[in-house]
Image (cartoon, rainbow, N blue to C red; front, side, top):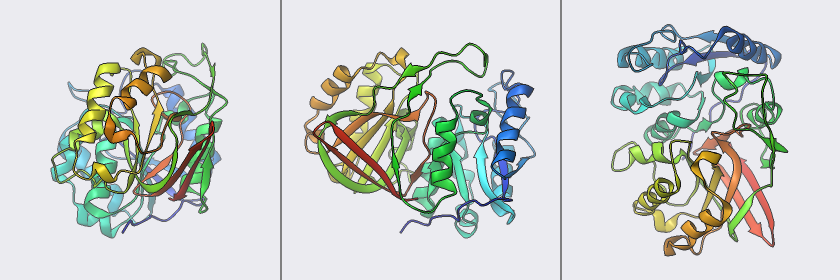
Amino acid sequence: MSLIPPKLKKGDNVRVVTPARSLAMPWLNEELKEQAIQRFKEIGLNLSFAKHVNEIDDFNSSTIQSRINDLHEAFADKSIKLIITAIGGFNSNQLLRYIDYDLIKTNPKILCGYSDITTLTNAIYAKTGLVTYSGPHFFSFGDKEGFDYSIKYFKKCLIEEKPFEVNPSPNWSDDKWAKDQKNRTFVKNDGFWIINEGEAEGIVIGGNQCTLNLLQGTEYMPKIKDSILFLEDDDEAHISTIDRDLQSIIHQPGFEKVRAIVFGRFQPTTKMTFDLLTKIVKSKKELSLMPIIANVDFGHTNPIITFPIGGTARVLARENKVKLHIIKH
């Protein structure tokens, strides 16, 4: 049974940790950091930084021990209610064998991040039953434009208690905004794509698809039976790798009981389109009977929703209409 951590309230304390890249990455400049800090103040949360967030090595990260110490300290500190990752990266899966899962289970609190953090959020759910969250990093809060949608769903998922419907953002962007906040291009959102019609409710599993696949065959991979898979990929992926990574998930035990798939928006550099994604899906007989929607606001474009890994979602896709609800979070 899933363990849902307490929701946030005004005055709660937040700890920034760096299980992947360091906060000392050159483009995570002071202006961006100050904007992010101000955003947390505006929603009434008190921000603090883990001891080793500015430690940086040849891999733009820090030692396993430093990252584990920061993560454990954040979970052990009774005053911390939200642990948010600074940014993603490539090496969060180095930590999985060193995590004290009993410590986490006895100190349930919100852990939020996306991209490479997919390994942590899914592994912690698999090992402890604690619901974790795919949502903005600390650095995401430094985005000056188009962040209203992201903060709206951050609040719906992490502060409010009731179920909520996910609606498409009006516009989206794939700019390298952290390097240039002034020159932004926003694209009108054409809404959710229906690949397969149908209706389903299930446990939410997923995040970044190629990162989730790093857990396959290990004790850290969540059971996908009775799940709704939320899957996205970044600009290092292309059509062929997205296809083969999806095929790899299909080969996992329990996939025959997966109830639906929700794809996040693919970055333009992947060359993914509605027609190509439809061809990929229709080529796999295992996907023929489940509802599948795409172009949902999560992944590596902006803005993004926050959703619960281990929570419950419901998808309805019929007659060119989509209803996506997060039920338990």
